[in-house]
Amino acid sequence: MAELGIDPADFVAMDEEDEGAGAPDGVDGAVVATPVLAVVGRPNVGKSTLVNRMLGRREAVVQDVPGVTRDRVAYDALWNGRRFTLVDTGGWEPDATGLQAAVAAQAELAMQTADAVLLVVDASVGATTTDEAVARVLRRSDRPVLLAATKVDDDRLTADTASLWRLGLGEPHPVSGLHGRGSGDLLDAILEALPETPRDTFGASSGGPRRVALVGKPNVGKSSLLNRVSGELRSVVHDVAGTTVDPVDSLVELDGEVWRFVDTAGLRKRVKMASGMEYYASLRTQAAIEAAEVAVVLLDASEPIAEQDQRVISMVEEAGRALVLVFNKWDLVDEDRRLAMKRELERDLVRVRWAERVNVSALTGRSVAKIAPALRTALESWDQRIPTGRLNGWLADVIAATPPPVRGGKQPKVLFATQAQTRPPTFVLFTTGFLEAGYRRFLERRLREEFGFEGSPVRLSVRVREKRAKNAKNAKKQR
Image (cartoon, rainbow, N blue to C red; front, side, top):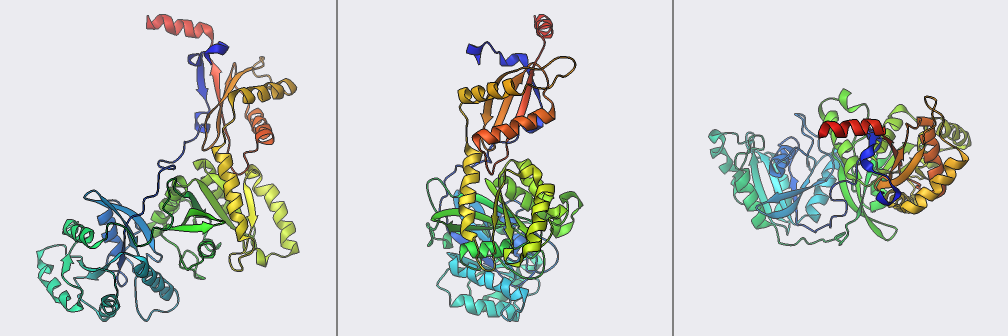
């Protein structure tokens, strides 16, 4: 800017909230394949509490009711310099029915794909018939199996863990997930049991797969869509709204490319108004959006666009992530609903006209293949950078045709423009006066017409030049 005679120190920032955040930490980081430990056990024995203790942070949703965890949820863990993956699972019951049967199936899949298994038993209760049934299955497994006796909060229960030898899984490790008692010894034993490299290295690559967050209100079909694109029962699906609680992380090969999809809990209400399990699930959904590069917002095409749908879209927009709107359950849409939807899009989603849109049916698989091209388009826009010379040449033509409106008896001038960052594309305009919000929206609209940016938010920030007299006065004070 110096060669143009412009000193950045002469400008003050305006609309700093529009400048946005940069790319999430580690977006370009490589994905390293790590061995996997599956944590299994019957409901309410403290698996998620123990997982949080081993991670050293509160990741898994915990509440004092059975059946909170339902899916296979993977977390990155580190102990004594070695990295591994912890997979928390729902309660496993051999004779479960309905929703619990689907949860148990997820636990069984976790065991089949893990490099080692940790069975968690409630030491305060002892080995139940369900624990014995689980142990019989694990004894036939070709994976290393460890036994954790949890809820051993003091020495009084340590002696009782000896009775767990009868499960035939080796030495029980007494541990307290709540207080951390014995967790270090358990982690040492886990590292001994885990192989140096995992059996399955699917998805490991130098650049790492792009991160996609599946978000939306409850019961719009997020888990069904994840199961459809992954080709397996990766998430528990049930007619009960709000089945997913923890974010479910999956590597999915779609259209010849590996993506990291994160299925999230449906957002019923504002995070501040939620409570208990729903509150922590909402926090994790928000964190999943911020950690993603592109968000796929699912909407139920058979129902009118709701306030919750708009709130989720606003969360993605405020986080500065690329956006793809996927209208699910398209197999239920008739001609009347199509006409009504057209009016709703013009009225309720006018602020995100730039978002990519795909109409699909997770149930039948209709048009699911179109999601990958939409994701690529959105991410290309999110990463796009406009050369400064081309940007200012275009801006001069636009301003010559449509000058900024007069403000306070003076017409502000745009002296210079530059793209400050990508992810999302953020532009800074250096001016002699404040630009009205309407004119900034006009510039954004023309910017999209010229350069595209389909599927990505665009942010405009204005920096107004301070008066020379004020600058001279401040310089004199500094002397």
